Image 1: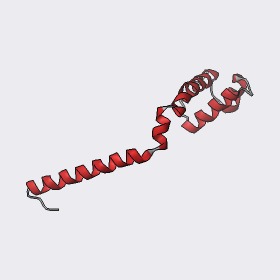
Image 2: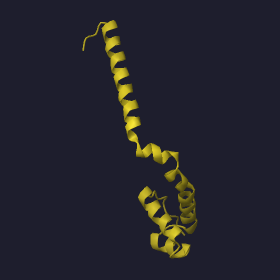
Image 3: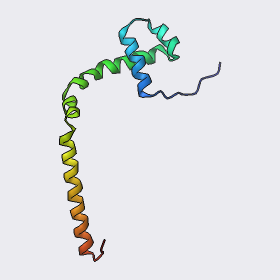
Image 4: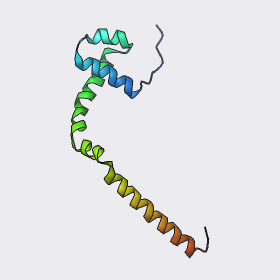
Length: 96
C-alpha cells in the first residue's frame, strides 16, 4: 500500500468541513468520504472551530469592528518615522 503525499488544505476548506461536522447532518465517516479527509482530521477541525468561536464574539471582535483606532496608531507611527528619517538625512548631510 502506497502512502499519499501530505496535502495542505485552505482555511476556507477546513471551515467548510468543520461547519458540516458541527451541523451533524452526516456522520464523520460520511463527511470523510465526501471531502476525502480522515475522520480524525475532521474531528480536530471541528474542535478547533468550536474552541475558537469564543474569540469571534470576544474582545478581538470589538477591535475588528473598530479598525479606525488601529489606523490612527499606524498613521502616527508613519509620521514619526518620516520625521526621524528626515532628521537623520539632514544630520548626515544627505538631501532627499
